[in-house]
Image 1 (cartoon, rainbow, N blue to C red):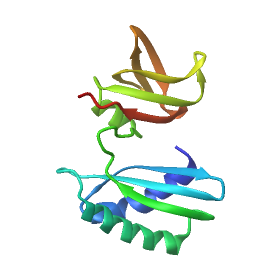
Image 2: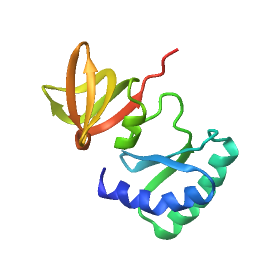
Image 3: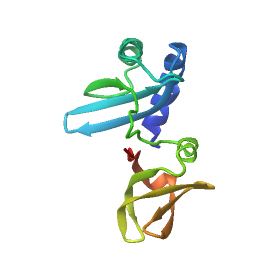
Image 4: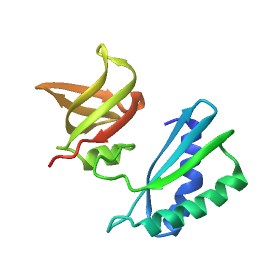
Length: 151
C-alpha cells in the first residue's frame, strides 16, 4: 500500500467507523489531470445508499479541509459488492476457497495476471492455486485483487 493510501486510510477510518460502517478499502485511480478516490465501506448487514451518502458527506468535508490529494478528483463511496476488491491479509484469509483475480505491479514468474482459487495466506504471501499449480504471491506486489462471484 502506498504512503498516500496509508495516510488516507488513517484519516478516513475513524470517520467511517463513527458512522457505523467499516472501511473496507481505498482505491486512488489517477487519470491524467483528473483522478478518482473510491472509498469502499461495509457493515454487518451490508450498506445502504443512505450509508454511502452519509460517509461521502463526512469524508468530503475532511478531505476539503486536509487536502491530501492534489488536483481535481471525484470522490465515490460504495459497497465492495459481490466482486469485492481485497486489500488486506485478513480479507484474503476470510475469502479462502473463493475464486479470485489478481493483477501484480510487476511480473512474478513471468506473468502479472492470475486467476485461481485463493488457498489462504502464508506469512505475507497469498497462496493461489491456478490450474493445479500453486503460487505464493507477495501481498506487496499486488496491484489489484478481487473476488470473482460464483453464481
